[in-house]
Length: 221
Image (cartoon, rainbow, N blue to C red; front, side):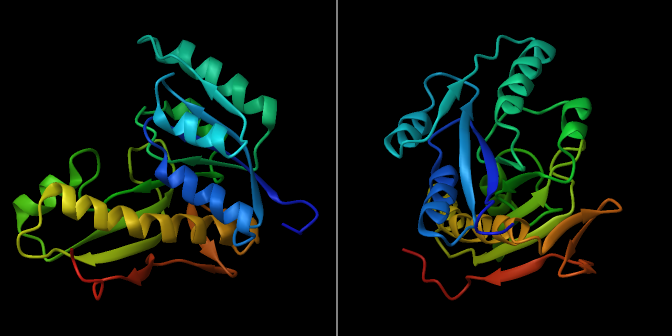
């Protein structure tokens, strides 16, 4: 994208929205050549909505009442009002249907707290500790109909420290998410990153493996 036509991003959240804030801050600082068109939450009480409003961002709360088709119809209508060039899932806890994902295939992203393909789904920090893994991290990936299975673009890696709890490990991983999510979306905004033939391509080359940011030297608190 050129400076005159920054990438328009819609951000979907469910909770406090710390990754949303990281993306918004990157946009505001110019580190990410994009603008946040709207922040949409799947519940009215999501704390991230207040954080977004404090930044002057447009927000929308959609109430999920158990009918996925009705919810997705409303979500699709809200997105189409803004016609975003990218959709960023940032702690968005609703599983979207294959039909909905297909509408945004190649321009919908997610940040997942594990080194995919390991530990898809929930409770990743607990599962890492239970398995005795030495490393953990987060993954930015294109969203596809299969949960947490889209092509991974960029990952962070942190050391699992002796005495780590789910909370301490989660906090350390989250800090890296705030680095790698804006970076990956920045590549997309600059047209360096693209979806092609069901794969992620960077600078004209297919990514055969995710790029990796190594944070293992960061000392655990």
